Amino acid sequence: MFQDITIEELLTLQNKKEIIPIDVRSSSEFEDGTFPGSLNIPIFEDAERAEIGTLYKQVSVQAAKDRGLEIVSAKLPAFVKTFEQIKEPKVVFCWRGGMRSKTTATVLSLMGIRVYRLTGGIRAYRKWVVSTLEQLGDFKPPAHVILGNTGTGKTAILRSLLEEGYPVLDFEGMAGHRGSIFGEIGLKSHNQKTFESLLVGQLLKLETAPYVLIEGESKRIGKVVLPEFLVQKKEAAKQIFIEMPIEERVQHIIEDYKPFEHQPDILHAFKHIKDRIHTPIAKEIETNLQEQHYEKAVRLLLLHYYDPRYEHAMKQYEQDRVVIKAGNRKEAVEAVKNYLSGI
Image (tube, rainbow, N blue to C red; front, top):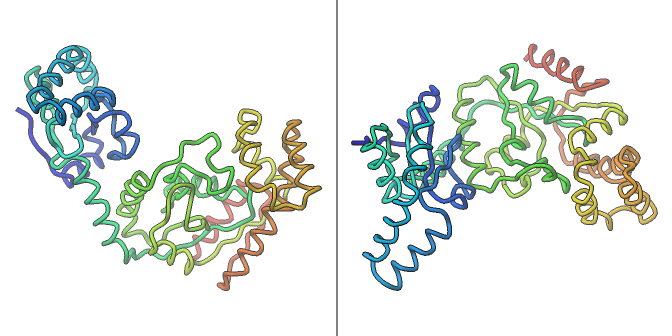
């Protein structure tokens, strides 16, 4: 038979890379929020769940169970085979640790495939996330915030530092969004539940770090909102301001957003800010976007929209800041590392 495990036991095993979490809920439920790092092998898809639910409400519990058994029986060989292909230890879960995960674990056990089942399912995990975030409100490590005009490559700088082992909280990565009106282009933005699940894991890893590096984001990043304690930490953080030539910034934006691949999305997003730009300039930007003269369009956007807005926003911060002048992203990374070595 299968064995139940708690959220804490699952987290310990996952941190050791000793288990694969598998969500057996439907694909839409999985997309709405799941345990980080999970695979999705649904026992019922959305239409099947809806059909069974209708039978449960309008006919009888037995009719719903009979139809569920019929659906599962038809897909059972392929369902089991999918699990057989995953050689690592596995834990299955559904919404409450109820019928779907119990059925899955029981069937797999009968077929000689050992799995665990997560006690309480994703609902219990969500409660754990919310509770843990509340407890992390006194997150101790001081913050250093990376600032700089749009296109400086702040996120890329942070990710380079993260790859080298520096303690980084990548808010944009966890949000699946770049934090601007163009921020979702080419990405898949996350909802609040997914963001918080990713965030709590990173905060726990960095609880004992000497400091953390973050980007100077606004409170809202795409669809998600930062917890208030992180907003306060960002506002009190030591500032590292990156200055970089506009030509380099333009190239960073072209590389990051890949406008040649996303022209319709770029034009659609531009309409949301068009009215905030002086009319002749806005027309020139739009024409350049339509004609795929992206470097000209980006340069105009920086000079006439993003840089003035960023300068205005920076006036709200009165803290002393370290200014780093870099010719490119690589120089910026090295300069930040030199600064951090002296703190």
